[in-house]
Image 1 (spheres, rainbow, N blue to C red):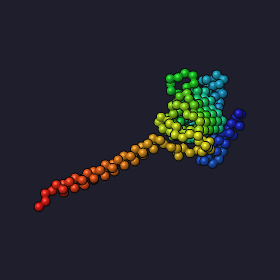
Image 2: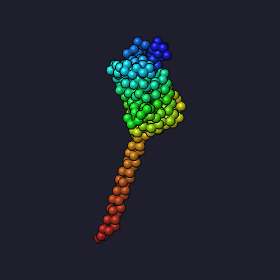
Image 3: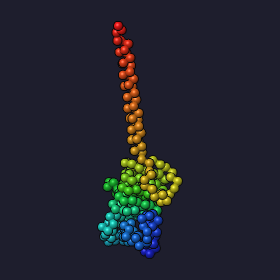
Amino acid sequence: MGLIKSIKNEIRVIRERDPAIHSNMEVFLYPSFKVMLHYRVAHKLYKSGHYFWARWISQRAVRKTGIEIHPGAEIGENFFIDHGNGVIIGETAVVGNNVTLYQGVTLGGTGKEHGKRHPTIGDNVMISAGAKIIGSFKVGENSKVGAGSVVIEEVPPNCTVVGVPGRVVRRNNQKLVREEMNQVDLPDPVNEDIKALQRENSEMANRVIELENQMKLLKKQLENKEAPTE
């Protein structure tokens, strides 16, 4: 894709996915726009073996945007980072088309592997704020990763993952993630378990109080029966 076409495409993607952008000129101030322009140049240099200059450009982008994308990462079309501060994408990460990341997301490696050591993200995936995806496995297409989740194993397509460690809590989503930018209304199995335990605890406490009252009543009845009559 040529530079002008790439710039137009980045403007279109950002305006489609961020309702806070009101004009094309604002896009030029946007961290995602800046970092992707740097990344596209750095990636070409990296592929050509110019590793120093590739890293030099990518590190300039980090200082300007707070987003660190290794020039070796493979990123598809219509990629979008909302806000962006603290996003880290490792060298061997592969990101598909129409993927959305929010601030604080890490696509990292475990530090114990050689070769492919970062995740592969399928098409139409949304990764919410603060999520960490660590290791050389795939997050399947059309999936969502909830805010603050830590994902350390493969995610099938069309799934929703939440929690630490990440667990699949919904399968076969009907809508494409890129059409539904909702980070909030995701199920939280840990919170649901806590609420269930709280309900059970409350029911048990009420039952104990009921049994204590019955014992007091029974004790009083026995005392009345044993009391001497005049």
